[in-house]
Amino acid sequence: PYLTEVNILKEIIAPPRLLTKMAQALRIGSQVSDSLPDSASSNIPWRRSTARYANNEMYIDVIEELDVTIDSNGRMTNVGIFGQVMANCRLSGTPDLCVRFKNPQLLDDCRFHPCVRYLKYASERVVSFVPPDGNFKLMNYKISKTASSRSMETQGHQMIPFYVKPQVTYSANSGRISIMVGLKTENAKAPEQVSVKIPLPSTTTTCDISATFGNFSINTQKQEAIWRIGKIRKDKPACLNATIAMAPKPAPTGRSASNGDDGNAAAPLPSASLLRSSESPTFEVSFQLQGLAVSGLEVDCMEVSNVKYKPYKGVRYITRSGFFQIRT
Image 1 (tube, rainbow, N blue to C red):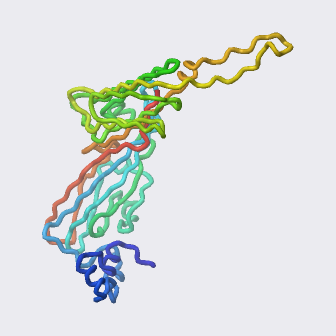
Image 2: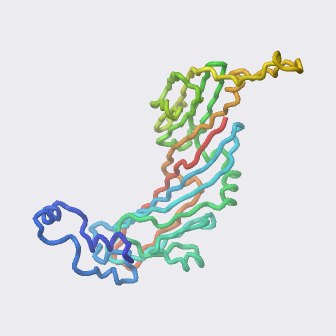
């Protein structure tokens, strides 16, 4: 079928409701319309022609995901920022919108909803469109490597307003993991939904964990523990301590020199402690920051035309963790 827009499909096939379910059970009428809606033959098929609201509102969410790897020296590498602009349109009639960014030069590799006039964006770097009704994804983008590198150089560690400091030590048959999570400055934005995935050695038999804040769970099958902190407190950092007991690793069998002809002693085998010290775990962190786009992208204005009312307009910024790793 050539009709894939949700608004048109809802006009052709009524969404399930109590009355339609009762009518269908009694075999009275049909949920499928006998004729195509007017918008099916319109040059803006993504918008309902009968959209009417008592309160006219337009909301935009700028949501960015941060991919980064922090090495054992605290340096940020492999930085990538990917974003999307989600919209919620509750406007009557057929409005025409224009979204302007303060710094559109940051945007790279953009993909738009069919409603966006791409030629206008290519020439003027403004997003002009007649919006669909309801929730929809306006565009996807990524921040160019040049802009990401520049942000990393100018913002430095303030690009991430909190720290995660893991310490790992292993002995022959045991290990200890300590993690501290807190804000870098008192005025920094406190992230929410913070969790840390802790990898455990493959030979772990038992794991005792204590945390000053949040809760944790241990998955013995995947050999990992998850520490769910929630929102980072500003008064003091959250700490976790884990004590691990491990089964001894079987040492590889060396060739005995007594049965050989050369008379040389066999090379010493590595101890269990050396084998375990070579395991450098990588911690995965997830979080969400409200009111912040980590790239610095900002909406300058959102203009609404072709209507007689004055709508309410709002913009919200959210940063989420993507592939966020800390190596030890």
